[in-house]
Length: 407
Image (cartoon, rainbow, N blue to C red; front, side, top):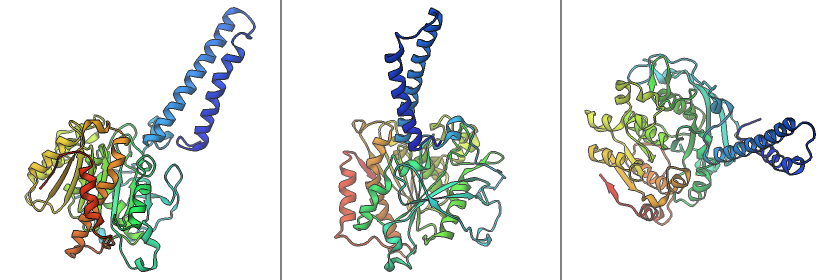
């Protein structure tokens, strides 16, 4: 029975109801020696407490997309088949253009918010990762007038622990963006959510660590190749962006900074720069790997500033300072857009990040449009809607009641 499935939730609700009724019905009716009656009453109380805790856990897990299955919860899941040393660029010297096309079978994904989302099990030829990937196609994808268009793509990364499904469920990304795509207020993005929880009990930090995991290559090479081989996806870098919250926000910025030839933009909600921001991050266990996966250090030491755009939102001591640090060290043509969110907006939860989906994707639509205007990509322009995208971008960020700095 699936950890996040409706049958399991309903089973727990029924068991919890039974656990409440049992003491009321049997407390004074138990027969036998006093020790046996006491033991029976203790068991009923433990049963009631156990089912209550389990029900609350499942409700919280479903609301926040923390654990996708029993393997994630129990720490028995391992999605890494091999982790060769792939070098600084994460390719291992492989000529990626010569690799055969990846042909995948897709099924309808299940779970809250997964309507219209396709699921596939991808074996990464370069990374050695074997894990699921979820893909959602924009409303325009199947329309005849778009049949020759190649659509921009956004990879969606969850926090840690976190399920790739959380963007569609708890974050409600398609529910929020689909109407805006139809109305021309947001570009018609293909949304791709790959698994990032690849090893039991630890956060990979989206890093390549020889002998352990090649999470960077999984996200920046294997997943994009699969998407471009199976869908009308725009080529990199002009047609590709990455977005994440919490640990996923850190990964999004790190991937864009480290690979400007693969991504043109990144969105980070409550992210951090130093991998040690997540105590269970593998990338934080070694000083060299830690420095190699710190986007602030990567930007500061870059010989040539990458042509990327970054959107960073956060609260004091929860992402905002990290964004300011990137803004201060960035040099043209790197652009940084920092959004301050007051503490009154809530804490480090989905309730904070969910309202940021629309303004961040409006910003991204503008960035994609600029690249299209410069002829850098084959992505379709945002349909005209009387300048609504630019107006909404301004009002969306201003409504967060924050100080916005740009460079």
